Length: 395
Image 1 (cartoon, rainbow, N blue to C red):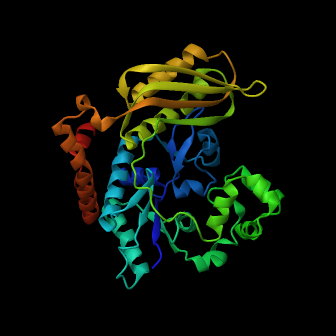
Image 2: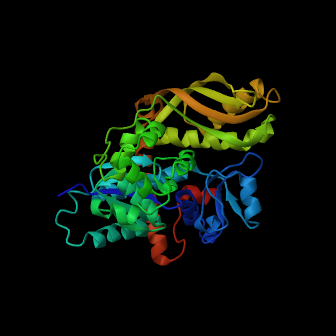
Image 3: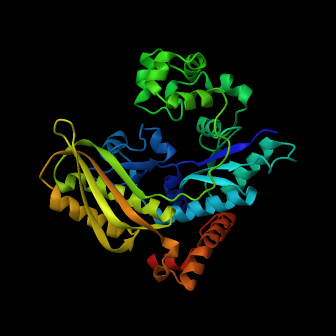
């Protein structure tokens, strides 16, 4: 029996998480991001996508596309808690998973379905179980390799279930536009079309004969892409914990900027994303590096760095230092097109005894179980019967 790899991708995760917290947002054009100059759409609801809004779009453009747009500031601590609940449920079904990001993972179901008579019904049960217990919907792709599973999960959203066997590749994938080839990238697709490669099938035909022009254009990646599109590729999960040397994000601005107020929204979003990734990796950082790219000639990169008083993963601390570095070095000094934030000299947060006690450790261990129980009870009664005490205090 071949491998059965699933790619499980939560649908519009941040937006759906906000709807769970505030049901009045359901079926509304919702954007998670920051309003104002420099604001960027982190993710959006499917209703917002009907207006042409998408991730990475400047918020002011999204506002123009939808007059009734609702913009909610991201709450990465909440999203991380919901993400932990998602992964915990997946691990009830399989022992081996590879976390790909905060809202997606690969899972090896090869052993789990050995004696399953109806695999489709089995995966539909898993999908519905996840929804009933967390309120989150997921699209699932099933295939013998990770690339095929990823391609399959992207085909039907939301709440899709797609199975691709090796023999199904031509009928399911070869007619798709080349832009849908996961791993190719948006910049490469127009160039591939110039070479007469308009579909994944066109790519496969040229890959089979080792087309020299295609090989020269893709370089070493050609051999990986060829293997993927012909049904081969990686089918084992990376179970080793990710141990990054630095964690950072950057964003190209929609227009040249100089003053701090112009990049404030983008900088805040970058710092939020970095803080979220730090928490996801269970790391704290000692040093922050702020990088900008100027608009002169060959677009030089300029970097400034400073250290925190103590290692941190706090958004407030990260943003405060990034803001100071920009204002001290670049505010009004030069026109910039890109800004980036990165934390380095990372430490394992769980090994810092000074930041952990037995009592708060137990609290965080139980947090997801409590949230799941509350969600299940509220859905059972079809109204908000229960909330956490900490949330009651805020309200």
